[in-house]
Image (cartoon, rainbow, N blue to C red):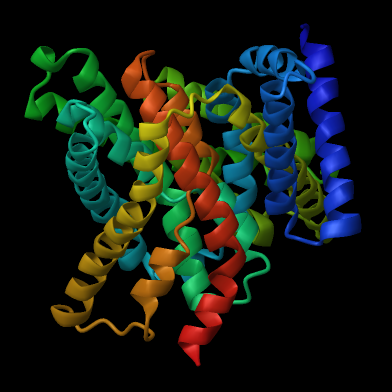
Length: 413
């Protein structure tokens, strides 16, 4: 199947599912289209089981032509992160920079260790023997909260602004840190003998700190270019080139593309919006990126729903996935609670009541975790962790995503 036909099918399905959700269901767009895609996938599987039709084979063949990992990590992710960071206030973020920084670094690393350790013993109990290093790799891919899912949900959650900034800021940065940790551990899995503490630490610093520095450079370059012209068509084109070109260049330099794009987006969305754009440019730029964000989000969540068709749902894998959901939530609670407790008790930082519970429940997993799981080397480890990841992501988006507003409101009363 050629690229044009593939795009036509995906866009048509995305438009149809969006229409059905808006017209008849009324859920948040991303969650609604994903649920419709899930139902369609389950119907195709049921039809095949009863021998009525073999549409699933054709659908599976189509999905195998889509490299989900490449489509998200090398394509959509840069645009989605930039669109999300454009509307995060750096002033609000500065007020919570210590909290966000600890959650995005210490929180992710702690969660990786907790999830990896719990998963290792859970699989042993179920009679599945997977190396501890591979379990840590799973911990790394499932620990970061997905900014795409989080930002899409926060738009309608109705939670306090300070708490929204913490959740959004953490999700924008911890996915970059999570990807860096994943890359480091994947290198250890591929060649454990060649790794040392120094080389691992150097790689982490190069990816994370290098990504921040490169993002500052991209943001400064974008600011200068935007300030030097007053034509919204040219300025929108400049931001597109800055995002995709900068993201690709960061990868070629072995720097964190996600972190670089987020930093650049924060600079352009704040300093650039205030000092480098006319009112007309701001309006057109915001409308363009909001529309692009909505379209890519819908396509992404449709793909997540359709990925059900290519998973190997064996009994032990399903049991492991169901048991992993509360364990990952508990690990998230501990990983969030530890740095916040330290800040509260040792450094006398003030936090709103129940902030740990809300941050834990609002830490949604999404397409990034699925994409990273799909990038694992072929084998039994990939099969089982892909199923577990998928089940956690579906629960996270549907259950947590639909209830975070109500949970936050109830805990704040």
